[in-house]
Each structure stands twice: as structure tokens, then as C-alpha cells.
Image 1 (cartoon, rainbow, N blue to C red):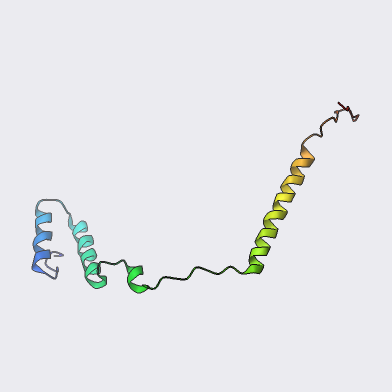
Image 2 (cartoon, rainbow, N blue to C red):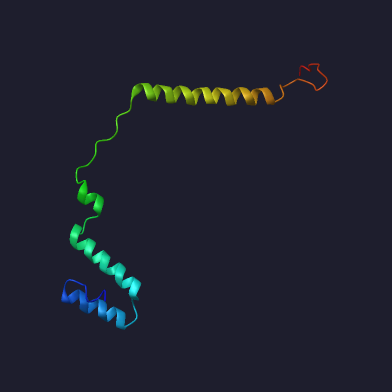
Length: 102
């Protein structure tokens, strides 16, 4: 049935040949026909290129947002550095509480 709905005789012939040689089943023929219809409607370009042919300008960066991002990243680094410094034993410190200067 899908083969008979093809628009051109060439498309009908090719779909029939593919179906008879068992290269395509009924579901695949529906998908191919849908693809052919899309191609005929949109052309060779993809849908996005067809609807939006103008190149977009690169996004501008808000300086306040950029400064906030830098500040957040730096405070995160400082927090990590402090947490590491508090967990690593100090050079020369003994477990008994005294100090050994080497």
C-alpha cells in the first residue's frame, strides 16, 4: 500500500524492487517513503539549516556574571586548600604533641 502512495513512478518502481528482493520490509518502506517526502519538502539541507540560514553571533559575556564565576571558582579552591591543609600533618609535628625540629 505504501508503495502505491509514492509520488513518482520511479520511486514506486524502486520501492517495489527493494520489497521484492527483500531488502526492505513494510516498516522500512514506510520510513524510506517518509524520508523521501521530507527530502522533497525541505530539499537537501537539514531542517535547522533550512529554517535558520543566518549564522548566529557569538554570545556576549556579562562582566558581572564572569566576575562572579571567577570569584566562586577561587573561593572553592581556597576552601579545598584549607581543608587539605587541616588534614595533612605538619612537618616536624609528633603525635605526642611535641615538636621535633630537624
